[in-house]
Length: 88
Image 1 (cartoon, rainbow, N blue to C red):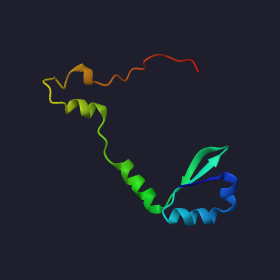
Image 2: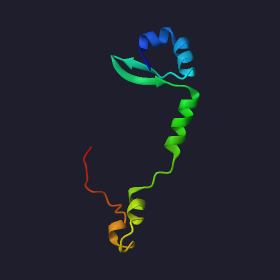
Image 3: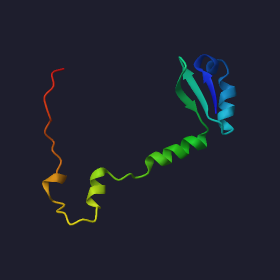
Image 4: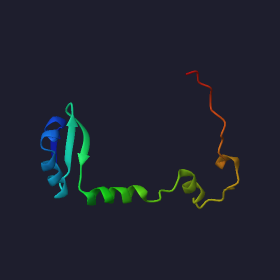
């Protein structure tokens, strides 16, 4: 994985795109801190697929717990009332 400043990335962008297309991750830094990464289309598609996977909510996880509990209990009800008022 190579790391390049934003200034240098602008100057040699096509070279860094070629590196990313070849499978290398190119990290672009701004003021010395990582700001973005150029990756291949395949790597971006894999990341999108991983993010789309169905992740069960905490409530769904609790409901699947094999214990003798009443699922209609108020513990599982969502409270839509605001917790407090805030002056902005």
